[in-house]
Figure 1: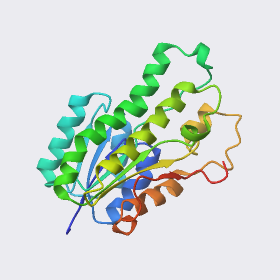
Figure 2: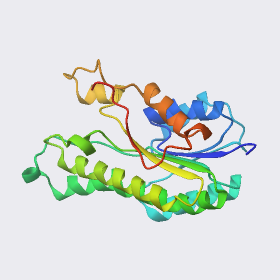
Figure 3: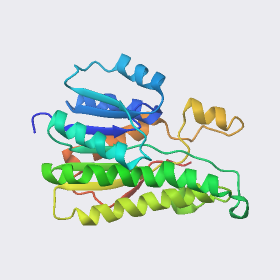
Figure 4: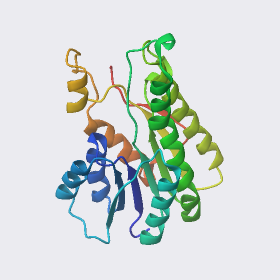
Length: 235
């Protein structure tokens, strides 16, 4: 491929801002979604790409029609989708199962699992057509060790891991791989503000996780699919 195409949902957040420059260095055309306009402006200020090389759109990934329309626009503009980095997600904790409201449960399922499902479902047909691709989604270490007090988040991220492993099996007949990474709390300004008394010394940094995503998005990762990859160090 002369210039493959990468889609990064949630690409203006802390992790997205770390991975997008790496994909630019690999000569990808880029399609990025955002929710917060200020974040989109910040990304556009630091990424030096021509208009025909980058497409950035406000997309609510919990809305299946919005996601489907976006993927169609990407494929029409760039001719293919080769790499999908599904980064949209969010955390809410502090409640045991008996105290978890339907509102909190629905929000965690929507933001983490449903948004990933919509994103993968909409992108996979285009990736099959291209017959070369890499899917990387963000799960969580919590999908495995299920800490107390965040049941809705744990369940949502466990669903993401199961979804990606299923997709990997469904794509066995193609050159498209699918893997999920499992961070713990990522060291960002937002998480430090949300957890002011926590020790963040061992938290993984966005740049460290982005380097793993960058490898998984490369041709060199062809033998890795269906994997749940820890990216949390000793945290």
